[in-house]
Image (cartoon, rainbow, N blue to C red; front, side):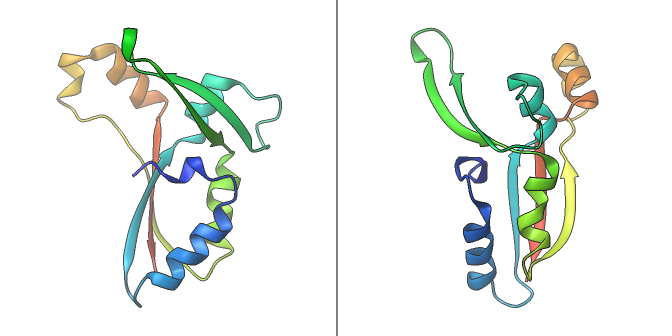
Length: 122
């Protein structure tokens, strides 16, 4: 879960996934949605892969995190160019129960997804 964005080059990792999956085996990859990272960091060129520094946590629990942002094309390309079959792509939507508890976040996530899920199969 949410590991891929720490790697600049996804080709090696995707090829390793193909190697270790059994025939018919599946895996679910979750990563930041490219549109979310574009909103947060506004790179000079949306189609370039950038390393970014982000601050997570609040108050005294804040810490710096480095990861890579990339376009949707660059997110999917390593899977498309590998022998792996993409079974499903999902832009995670908020659960309906969030509408009442956090309406502002619910509305934002309904219009601007933050995560992307890719189901692959060998």
